Length: 596
Image (cartoon, rainbow, N blue to C red):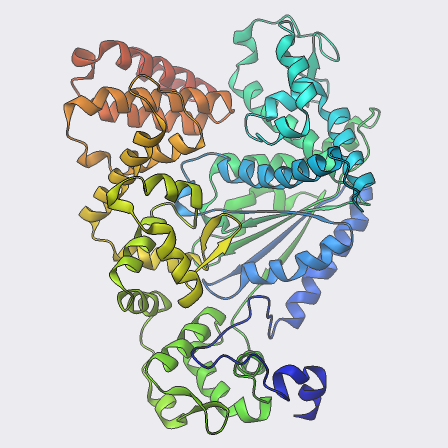
């Protein structure tokens, strides 16, 4: 008791800021993970040293849902950043599986948005402690990518336009500025500008769109980008959360990034032959996939060091520490309660939280004003049934909320793990969706199932998002997706404008999910055109997998009568289908679209 009081007197001696209405679990609290933490940090240190020998590193963390895989990685990022690391994090979810590389590109864009903001402050005369590092990074990107490479990647990383405004003006005004790619002697792609560093500058455009070259171009540019901002002195941690939902295109890109150190070693005589230092750390549900499905041959490469961390539930000591910190009571007083809770939850942190919250809801755990502490009936806790899953606990919790809260959560769940406040504000222009932002703000303050991260609302765990989404009746779910998509399109697209941006893509995706309920003939052609525009946009972003999916959705909207009722649109979709199939290396798909 004295040890805890001395280490944290505000919490264990004076009981300051104790919550009396409900339990508050600290987000950055890590209990019972000492051995896994040591293993993780050791792998980081080894990766930093071995990168000088052109060896790349992969760290995989597997375990069941709710066990704390993402939390373990988040716990080290702050200290890594202080020691010169760059941390970029992306989180896959079910909704992102059909958008090839969208999660990866968004993660990099979020990082460079921060860089653009710092550069803007610097341009306005503000002094920054990191000024030298910032300017070095920007100069390194220009040196590694050159103008056309930066412009090409800006389609996936829009914040480049704010970082390099003069460069964009210069490139756009130069009509002869082109990018060309071919394979060098060692098989790696070589990119040039107006004939520089490449013999293929005058190749026909069709040659540049060969399926392999198209993919290599994109991978090569991303590799150069990562190389420009990471090295053994300034290493990069690239976090891939929930790999079980990662799309194949993202995994292929990650594989290229990991193997690029080996390619640099083989080249060995260029300006860019110094090693980068990239550590890829991925979390996955071990009951759904294994690492061989994700990384394949990378795990058997002699130039890739792999560290596997299997995360189980906390032990009794970890559960005891977690409850002690939350209830602000000494370990000694909590031990019996912790043993019971651990036996019922098997130490799964998410299950522990929800089980404890259910005790509060059922008045089996209460704050006593007389004793000025939390009290409980241990016999009642022992007799409490736990033959339900975390998802069922979440479901009960949602059903006890006000109707407007339930509806707001349902709308948010249709977007996946996160949704931007600006998207919800666009929806609120319709009477159907009024009050979404206010309701979600209230849930953030009162319920804790969702949190605010910048201008986005983010579910605290994918199990919560899944539980909310599964609560919606299947028919009502389709209608909700459809209404969301239609209202978003109304707010951003005119009757003759079928151009696409990130918001319109969100809207199209929502409607495509509910394509089975789209019966109005007047909507078929506009929806098909929107999917055609989306497909063309995906090709420009080097995402042929997504492009092909939009073609299929567009044709589905037209239906069997498409050739009769919308010949031109149907023909253009088949053209796009041929190109997308070709870029995906699917000759049979090309033949099928041509024959049809």
